[in-house]
Length: 196
Image 1 (cartoon, rainbow, N blue to C red):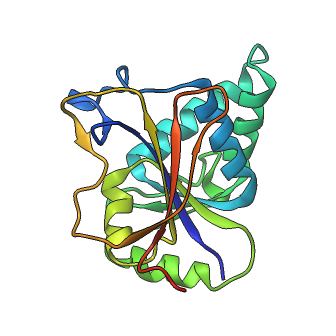
Image 2: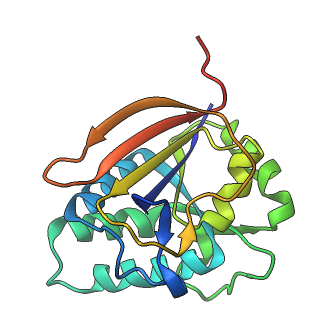
């Protein structure tokens, strides 16, 4: 059975973006992209909210078109732009002329749990989601997230958007590592009570 893995970067005080949704105070480091590339290589479906999808697709399309970009970032772009896409949104529709149209499906928020459960039954790589807490928080509450990776960085933002604002959810630690050459600590959690 396939897994849904969520990976999110947060400040030490638990914010994934600062006030006014700004990212300039977030503890991004080069190792962040190395981590993301490792996850992308194991995934065959990327799960998004509509806003994060548009921003991510545009960013990595620009990287792919820029020959001055480094090999790792061009590799990330190739991974992002070649995966199957599931967008969870009540308002987005697929423009048939969009470059991603043939790889994408949109599902309403009310149907997201059932759709992800259905997709997890098949074979293949993981379903992977970055950021977009308003999209993954309800999925975690509903029990369809299998693993949560929280990258904690060396920053205290004091305010912003909380990484999680749902109901209490049981987690169990699978591992903790400092990412090579960085101050980012990767905390890997299984979702649900630990199975012995």
